[in-house]
Image (cartoon, rainbow, N blue to C red):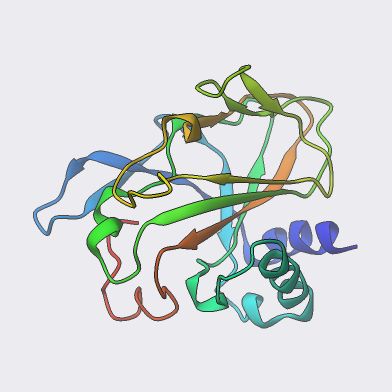
Length: 197
């Protein structure tokens, strides 16, 4: 099963502590990262060790692109595979990295979260700014997609896209972030044209 493959890949590559984007701007104009403040999870980027070229990954990417039409694969950031253990969470945040808006890669205009496991208790994605206080409960195979920016203003953040990963109360949560950028990101990091991440 695909979900199990991604979880196994995380263990094979080796989980690392995640970091969050700092609120302070570095001398080069980018935002740095900080660990252990509002985010407690482990991750693996699926651009290492040939992960992105694996048939399982390519199959998922094809289905993702079929769901969100008009996006070439070059506009997708590498999958970030995540593991949240009991107590793991990510405090309210927005997926936009401000410096990306004017960089070659462009901002993360859409976020797709893929759940790779059920969770016994907790671990919801909580959109507190949406009408109705929306919570999406973890369910293996479930996919959630949301818009991060205004339809007609690619420099504006949508308030209802602020979200948090609620603490895992019992069990473990596995999943992945798939971000869709405004422009081609395929080589932007390699050329230093998409900093602050």
